Amino acid sequence: MKEEKWLENLKGRVPDKALTYCFSLWEKEPFIFEITKSRRSKLGDFRYKRGGDIQKITINNDLNQYQFLITYIHEVAHHRVFSQYKDRIGKGLLPHGIEWKQNFKFLMAPMLQEGVFPNDILIPLRRYMNNPKASTGSDLFLMKELRKYDKNTCIYEEPVLGDLSINAHFLLRKRQFKKLRTQRTRVLCQELATGRNYLISAHAVVKEIDKPEDLPF
Image: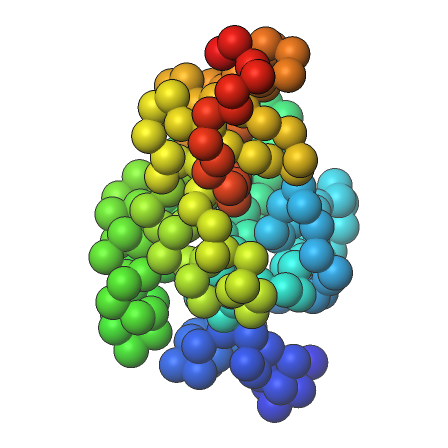
């Protein structure tokens, strides 16, 4: 693939100052790269085939340019781990273990500058990169800053669950809940109509409501 065509496909999807770097990662160890329709379960994906000459990375097409860049490098780090440790695949090599963390931190380091990311993202991103997790969604502060740059920003006028106080009542998908306590990246909540408890992502966009008078919770 010629550099001009590759860069054209990625232009506008990552910050301009990251374009050449993204190409260099592909050029050093090429892979099949596809931009796909949105997937609720994941932002990107690395797929490998044993014995395959070239592996595949996919990224959702609806990510803002900062989330796209982080996801791209996240998946390239998986590709590098596969290249370096493929003999250990299925033999105790964890998908987001120390090998992936080291590669991800190394590959992200040149991008952690204000010329690439705005300062409001850069501050929590640098903290997150000290010990990156499987998903940026594990860091509430980073996700709150990233989502401000999403294309459909109007859906974020409501607060996220993590912002609500304990015992607050809220509406999610037309169901009423009470916030009980936070457990890492999820929040234990009680559905008011049934009294059942659920673990809900702290990043879920919700609508805070007054305590219903007709429910004894």
